[in-house]
Length: 285
Ligand SMILES: [Zn+2]
Image 1 (spheres, helix red, strand yellow):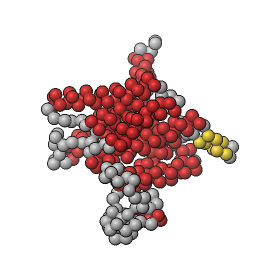
Image 2 (tube, rainbow, N blue to C red):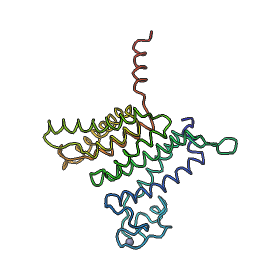
Image 3 (cartoon, rainbow, N blue to C red):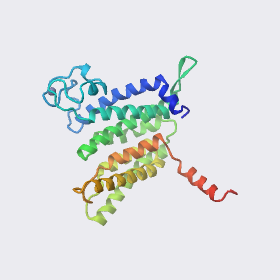
Image 4 (tube, rainbow, N blue to C red):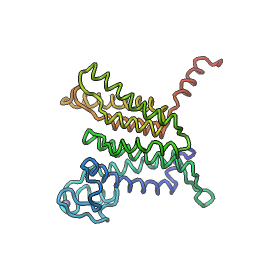
């Protein structure tokens, strides 16, 4: 994290990363649309969702096409979903933050220098946050987390542990097992107390994947951030919309994804924080 914010914005590498992020975002939109419908491998051309006209590549430029077309399709002037530019922008901003956190490429004396270990950390974080973004939007729309994504992430855990310089077998394996166990325990307690299902098994597989990819130490902060933001949004929605009540279901996946992304990109070291507070209270230590 050696770049300051102004250095980050003026570096040409940042803007290259931003453009790549928006292109990935446009691919994520395809994944978000096709994975829940089970036709991911069917066609490689993109079609207008209203009149089925094939969309030429020059109308499929991430972010720019939406602005030039002013949010309407070119063929039949029907409104385009805001989800397309939002996901493209989010993907671009996320990739820039991942690059800022793990700067594996840098300008040095008019040439690009690259760092292999930092490159692995960058790829790991970029892949992880991208999968979480796709999962979040699908969960938001359909209230499901596709097994094809969460089970694949769990299955890839050994490879992640093998390649990643910091993760170790104990922490990754414990993370995957504990992640699922924590959600099962909460689901069981919830059914016991409220007599209905409150947290889905999709969330168990998702937290297992997160524990595997980030290690068992990440589970507590992920769950804490996820439940705090989830509760705040839930209370906010309750106050804003009278039609909602305590029985209304909110998908938990996007909040867990937010928690995991926050923990990975801006880690708060709880033990250091407690130590600092302790030294403030008793300075002789
Ligand atoms: Zn059309």
